[in-house]
View 1 (cartoon, rainbow, N blue to C red):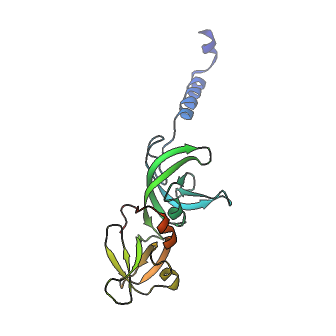
View 2 (view 1 turned 90 degrees about the vertical axis):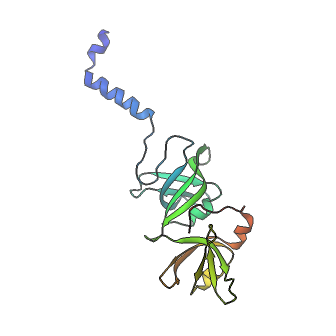
View 3 (view 1 turned 135 degrees about the horizontal axis):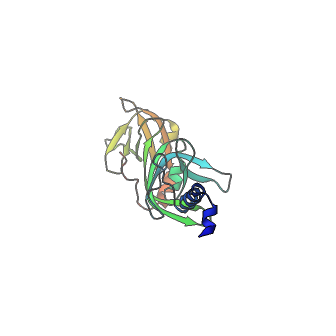
Length: 194
């Protein structure tokens, strides 16, 4: 017991707090938040593509750029094409030698692109027989679109996101999966998009 009397109580308390602090994982309350331990299922933040080819990773990063979550899984390609957008992804946290700790995303939702919540769906020809296009959402809603650029028209049959003005004119868009990539994908849609 005499040995412990040589250390000041403050030093012992600091040592004890240091050991406890290193033994548990910090939870982040804003930005990409890990909900609990491995096996939790959600993260959100701004999409970034980090690294150099062939080791580029898609990550969700908090606003301060202090915390990030690597995204993997069947929707990594789509999420990766949303660089700069705010996204919420669900799935399962896992560890691998190649990726370390990562979220194997099984669904995602685009929260905003430059502050605007986009519509997401498959770009199709209008059923009404006129020369027009519709965006068919995962819920089956057909949103008529006007004034498409050639770049967006070339994504016919693919999964896209669009922002619209009050006349349903596309103001911004992005291609999440080309028609060719859609053919390779099992019939899955991001949840909660409209």
